[in-house]
Amino acid sequence: MEDIIISTLQRAMVAGTPLLLATTGEIICERSGILNLGVEGVMAIGAVIAFIVTMITGHPWLGVVAAMAAGMAISVIHAFASITLKANQVVSGLALTMLGLGLSGLIGKPYVGKPLLIKMEDLNLPWLSDIPWLGKILFSQGPFFYLAIALALASWFFLEKTRLGIQVRSTGENPKATETQGINVTMVRYLSVIIGGGFSALAGAHLSISYSKSWIEGMTAGRGWIAIALTIFALWNPGRAIWAAFLFGGIFVVQYLLQPLGISPNFLAMLPYIATLFILLLISFKDPKKLNAPAMLGEPYNRGER
Image (cartoon, rainbow, N blue to C red; front, side):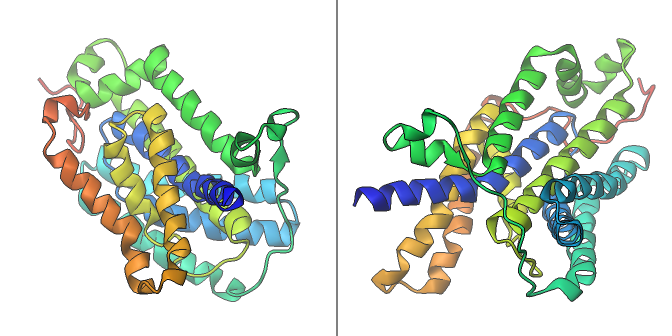
């Protein structure tokens, strides 16, 4: 029984890692006032680029860098449409998702079904990995897990404790006041969207070169949409996103544990999305003032406007 619990929690950490990466990126983006519904598409681009580059070069980290570069590049489209052209951010984000999913399917078609022979070894932290229970669950994981935790904590510190982070939050709360302080609101928002895209692409890279070690079309399986919901669930706080992401990682794992009980696989596959809807339903009853949502989220800003 003990081994089953440890194994389940360990797999929950793995399943929650891409959710944490994508959620952290979306929080940074939305804190600047830009709503990005293109997370799913950017994750798909990151997954296919990471897989192809890793397979060709034999270097997983080169694949990670290439994936992040591709994710940041395609995110410029959403930034340009939302910030420069002041287009509807919901429409622009949905278009980015469709573009990312379609483009990744086209690029990755020759690689469907090909296994990735390069393996990213787990990192067993000295002494810590020997701790009963916690050692196997938290300190014997792959590099993406530690990277996701580090980036989430660094993002929390950046947004809450640094001057630049305050500027990012200020552009999402009151861009007019921010502009009067001599801050380039457009530049801050562009950088936030691009950085968020890099995080989402990193989440996709984890799926293709660490989690499944293969590429199949649609492998993101709605995780981008869950990350957007987790952004609200975490109250736009990267620190809260850590436990929220791994909670949903556990829901992903539980569906496999319940299959031997004779429960319909189709129903079990719905569990993460049912949980997402349930969480959003609960949040809808919460006082909007306590949600900590950026005041100007999704609203275009005209520079110099009075």
